[in-house]
Length: 412
Image (cartoon, rainbow, N blue to C red; front, top):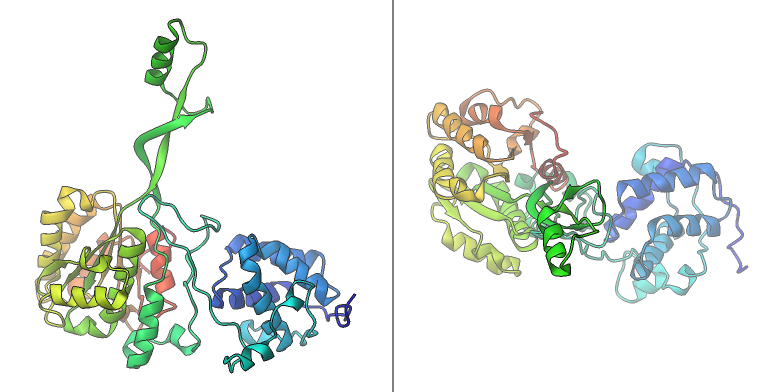
């Protein structure tokens, strides 16, 4: 055994170590589903690693599922345990003394943080790797667990960006958050399609037509019954973003989120202020800067007044009733400040409610401690919403993704 691999480790708090180490992996772009985090904590609790090599192999067996993930995993493991990892500093648990700088056999072949500094990375930390998960129109996702929670695609190098309101970001920070927001995974719930596919299980519906066709081809009574199962597909995702003057500090990030959803998940995108504009086609460009430039040019009245009821009426009449909103998840990004009678807002929300499968309202003002949706368009719209979230910061966008998936808070 190489020198250092036999160093005895102090006893660690399994849950804290698991959560903090997986956080570091996510920051480097290697996502792990919640069930893997639970399995790692359970493994560390049942068989506490006595030596660093045991810790390395326990983490690797639980968290690594493909050979191409090894470089990222080894680099993060090296950076974490060479710099003295303390989960208590992040999670409030018992202090964990620094581990030995040695690594497992595979990790010892990877560049150390000192090598990274020599190559132009002064922090010595592994550079983030982009996540490669995206939800398609047919419901397919990335190569990882399809039931994983939506996680942020790549973590910023500045921790304070995660919880800072979009209205308080500097121009350079806005560009960074916009880039991250465009990479977020937005996946809707699945539904059963009318289309079917063959199934070998007799517990599903008998496909009478296919069975009869098979009998006719054989020229005799069939001895084999054929079954069919209905296909699953993702529900449509429709995003309506308020770009009026009161929403301008937040709309610049929300429109980037729309661009990523259109390009990566086949969503339909609209913006509104005094009028409604469909931006699905302009936002289809993979280049986010060009896509947003085309979107701004196509949407008149940017940063002007707000007519929520009229915009919702046009959406339902021209798009929603024609099938775009039927059975869809509809997300409205707005602070609810409207120039119309609240009763008009309520009437149009009631029409949309009859079409949509789920309505989510994202209001950045909700993050204020004293905020209560008691007056105006927000109070009129809220009874027709299935979820009410803030989405005011990069971290809060995770609540938006969870609500779209069907796991978000309801009117809280």
